[in-house]
Image 1 (cartoon, rainbow, N blue to C red):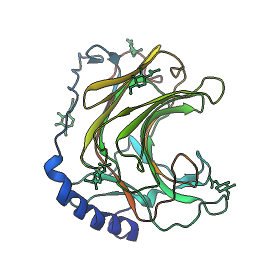
Image 2: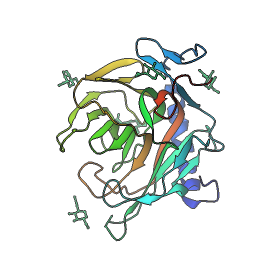
Image 3: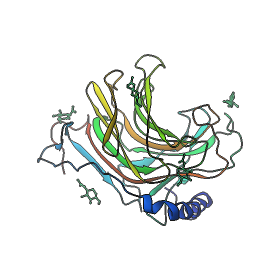
Image 4: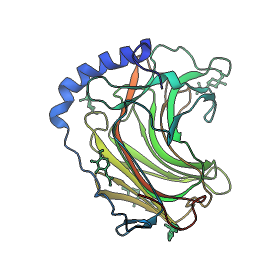
Length: 269
Ligand SMILES: *[C@@H]1O[C@H](CO)[C@@H](O)[C@H](O)[C@H]1NC(C)=O
Ligand SMILES: *[C@@H]1O[C@H](CO)[C@@H](O)[C@H](O)[C@H]1NC(C)=O
Ligand SMILES: *[C@@H]1O[C@H](CO)[C@@H](O)[C@H](O)[C@H]1NC(C)=O
Ligand SMILES: *[C@@H]1O[C@H](CO)[C@@H](O)[C@H](O)[C@H]1NC(C)=O
Ligand SMILES: *[C@@H]1O[C@H](CO)[C@@H](O)[C@H](O)[C@H]1NC(C)=O
């Protein structure tokens, strides 16, 4: 993580102060109930039992269980830059910034974007909850998702050019015709909301603020991977970017119950 001396982060927090001035009265949010630890597993009601729990809401330092991505690619013409991961001085949230004015995103000059992932790649099933707020700037995508490979991936995504829809996708096991749908939701940039994905064998359930909006029983990921959170752009038809000004995604909290394949049997509280 990179803190206040980054010009991008400074700009981001200045821009954010103005946004928060308007948005804070709207900040009513639902948070899923916490799950009890029974001495062996975390018991998530109506979902399942899990051996691991990640619960982060203090972003002063990135915990060792999470790391900022530092590489080019994933989506074409994207460069994941850890210096674009920061903290909002005003509300303490994690910021994932796509700087404005990057010009055209090309293979030679990919566009700066920000991503964090779990530090481990052996996540298999879980209940992931993230309280976040998207930028209100055309030209980026904000996402919270599970990723193993392009054929084992389950996504919650918001296009910041269209802040009243959330998109749900289970990527195709064999090709690129995943199951995808969207729901009308409250303006994702105006206030914090809880986005939740429950992934168990044969089923993914997608929620916003505790309301179940989509269930899929097909193309449910079947290999282990990472939980990921990102804010990104390129010149493609999905992001509609790059953005003209800084686009800052805010993550207030991450609370995930999940299994790790490297842990046999019980987890620890
Ligand atoms: C998660 O962290 C928050 C903030 O530190 C705390 O209030 C809450 O009790 C924690 N939840 C669990 C289940 O540990
Ligand atoms: C897609 O979402 C709409 C509501 O937004 C719902 O009515 C419809 O049943 C969903 N389609 C599928 C195939 O899940
Ligand atoms: C969403 O909220 C932002 C911030 O309050 C506001 O500027 C924008 O106009 C809203 N967009 C829509 C489509 O309601
Ligand atoms: C984005 O840029 C690439 C490489 O410069 C180009 O091949 C592609 O057609 C562009 N895509 C869009 C949607 O503009
Ligand atoms: C997670 O692993 C535990 C054993 O460690 C198992 O009892 C539980 O059923 C697994 N959860 C899911 C959803 O598969």
